Image (cartoon, rainbow, N blue to C red; front, side):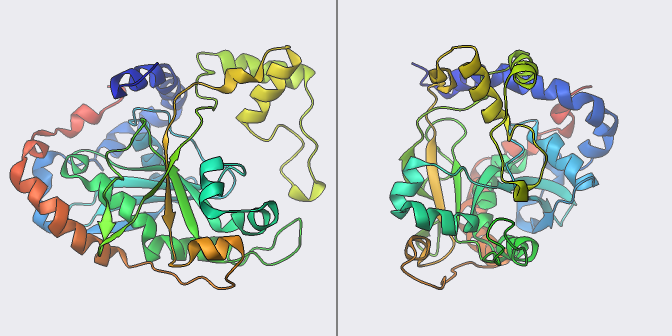
Length: 346
């Protein structure tokens, strides 16, 4: 059984290397400019850090920086499913990158989440649109050495992030039901990267925990189909398998929905057990409610949300005094970080 974080990182290493290889042709030519957005330790004065949330637009420099920074994660970062919101967290004092936030559509069936809410099928179908999953949250060095991964996580409760959700998705109409989609974000979920989390636990704002642990996932997915295996399965599925029939109102073509469907269809066609999707790595599952009545609202017991979000400046003021300045005072190793060590391709 895999139990240590070092063992988990080693298991993910082939997938990480594969993502680096795929990204190199597009991003390598921008590496010098992207590296200039990463701070060296001597460019950071903890007393002057001034975070700014920057939305990421498709095809922009910010998108390239988001992708480049996420390639440094010790597990492969998903691109997210369906709807997506991505943000850079920048430091105004030096225009350098602090960290990343990526939100995407949640998986429809998640046992630990659904039990926590107390969902029935109808309520889940009705309100899942107001849930997003954080597929990436974290800080880059040297800010990560100052515990700013905790602060980036706190920003999931910020008014800036919630307003971006409302502005992007609040005016949309469902293609299936032809009704207006609700414009408020009720819940964000995320899973720890490496088993039990040491970043999200004990993160509080004004005495209230931000991350609520709901238990652990069952340990299945697709990351272990790598080193050309998924490419071969995809070609096989295209040749001999049929995608699940879609409602024509969904749009998006007639192909397979995602990697999960490609793998599932290929395994079935080859007569292999679907148990192969279980990799055995259980991750801690967290819920980040955005309102005082998130559970009651998502179950359908309440008709209106009572939001509890705060501006990023309010969140940072508490984080600064509780975590940032004490850490900077007792551990100055962040000063030794050289941005050139962040280089991927040389």
